[in-house]
Amino acid sequence: MKYIKVLLITSMTIIMLSCHSSSKNSDTSLTKNNIVNCLTNLNLAYEELLSLDEVAETLSISTDAIKKKSIDRKDQYGNVYYFWESDRPHILSRLSVHVEIPDDNFLGLGSLHKFDESYTPQEIINIFESRYQKLSNEEQKIIKENIDKHFSENNVENKKDAEKFVELREKNYYYKIEDFGESSFWRFNSDNGGELIVLYGKEQFNIYVKTSNKPKDNLEIAKKAARIVMSKCI
Image 1 (cartoon, rainbow, N blue to C red):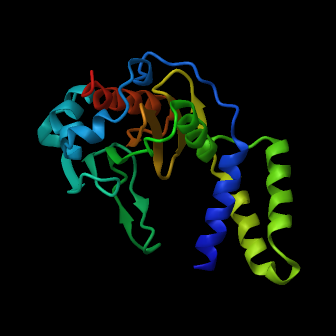
Image 2: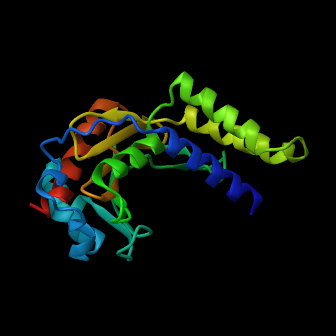
């Protein structure tokens, strides 16, 4: 519980610092049309928001070559993943260094949820971007000062946990993708693939992808999948 409290305090500090986000709308923005919670209001299963047929058409592969796995929930804890064979060599299992497993291609959708409707569109953009954007040196300095102020000398363990959380966040930051949704961020590595996080209206969803070891190619496929999801509201 102590560690969770530290994470919340640190996260809120980061959020409070982030008030400089761009307010321009992209071509895939819903806010400009005052449509804010379309996807969650549709109450569709994840596999309806991103279907097998849509994935096959986007990737120009047969539906017979694709396997589907999903968590059948319509909240942020549900998801759907589509897998198909790749030409990449097998990789070592995380569970055992003595076991190799296929490095399959995949495309998935998950984590759909809406923000509190009491927030203005710009406040939601600020909150969203504060979670993923790289912190400036000045922001890191202010956060460190706030951690120093919050934790007493007798609370060294929690202070170290807070500092580790900020350090971990900086090592795992996302790259901002311009003019996509209200705002969006992307990260990729060859082990886990890519993750595109999209703010659309007052809702957020994540696209997960790995079709090669090329970040740019994976991003383009992730954006195509995100457009399919967003098209359900057009």
